[in-house]
Image (cartoon, rainbow, N blue to C red; front, side, top):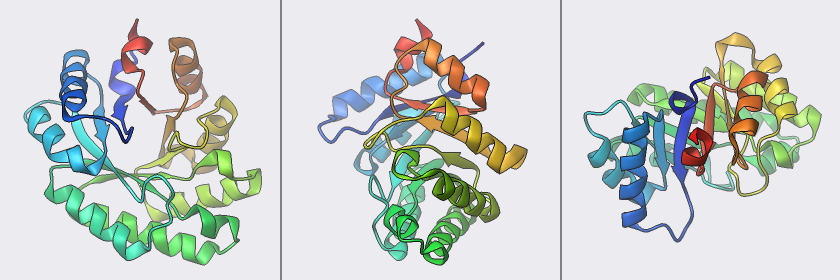
Length: 213
């Protein structure tokens, strides 16, 4: 199975340097990865280096806690577009989900999706599966599906990672209309292939090169 085209080559560590981002982008172009995902302050660098290639510059919104007010997340999406993003990975309000305030969760997600779509950006909604119980995961999946987002994503990678079970469940809950991105803890080719087999369309990982070896 060809994995390169499913990989979001990711570097979101706070200590990442511009030199690291340059290397990341060169690697992504060389191997034909789907996108490069970086923190917003490096988005301009990534967009410049990836211009004219098939690799999409992408960044994160409300990252990694999802706790910013919705209007701030909207401004982050608009700024991402202005700085060259083609995709955004946005964290839902996890605390509101844990509180059972699904109306607030739905508003947050819908406003992010509407903003991204108005800008022509692909949007992935991160629900942080490792912090949710099964019923919360299912409810969050239903809201993301109804929002019209492009992807539902398992994790930021900061609080746990993707599991085969979570990917399989997300695929079942959202059906064929929504893509699934697995992220966090994907360090071997074997695990990556298991996640794809379970239903993952995209893999977010900082170990993209290792997955190809």
